[in-house]
Image (cartoon, rainbow, N blue to C red):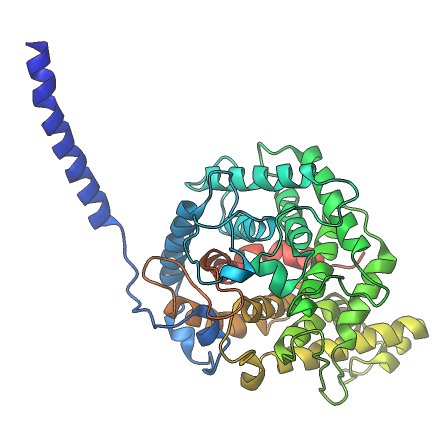
Length: 433
């Protein structure tokens, strides 16, 4: 009798499960924006302007897009806990499970998970974040002391296009973000040790000019993100070599001439966008201080209300001549370069765009937050609207050239859509002591 009841219960339970699944599926809100064909970089950074796309930006649309993007990434995770972009020699492979994991891609996915509100213990993607963090830490801990890199995995899309040390750069940014959040359940000492290793690799990899050695096709981006990594680590209490950091900033700023708007592109595959976004980022922190000090001096009646932010005015309010020149130049570079970085002809990038273009634009947008620049709101509304419009139906985004990996592209797209969630940390990075 008991056996008969068991057999009778099987189809009943199966039917209940099907009904429950259908109910869940039916109740799950679906994105209503019809996706455009093409890749995230062709449309966001390509031949069309993003102006006017703010009409697609709404809290509901962003929430649904982020939900679907995160769900796609959760399924793309490898058994090791890592994520991979694939090799430079096999860019046509888009299956996230047909590639090796690499620290750079895993780190950028980790940052996307963090920025979307995921923690190590809470959220439906908590296990994805936990496994990704563990993968990064084990990879760093396994690196030989005399190895210039943190991973033995070579010839990845990210390394070939951005630079050989990009894994340490992005891993450092990820670990700094984790430490800043002080997540429950994390091993703070272990993470700090691994972050120190990454920072050491970045500093050792910085040449006498301030750029990262082993540059890829668009190596200026690796150097720009290395500068960001050093500042992020410094913001969470890591000891950073000030000489190396200053050299790094100087290299980035020198790629842009604020007087005539010319841009050095020899380290950026001839693409203005790659170089100028780094100039914006490297000058953001100093530009913020100069602007804030001038504003304060005006409020106190020390200078005229129409006084410009320049070296002369900074000297007038008490800066020594060398610092006045440094901060005045940084302000001019920032204000001029950010406008250049957002020109439609510059946003064309490579024309048929890949991950490099999107990272450049993300770097520009984050720089505005570092500098407490109110202009970022207009940038965000238009660009997030465009991102929403070109999301694939399965929740992913993809690129057309160079960095074509849907994993890397999806993570960077989510970083842009959720940038508002990191305002506090980005502005913390921009604060001068």
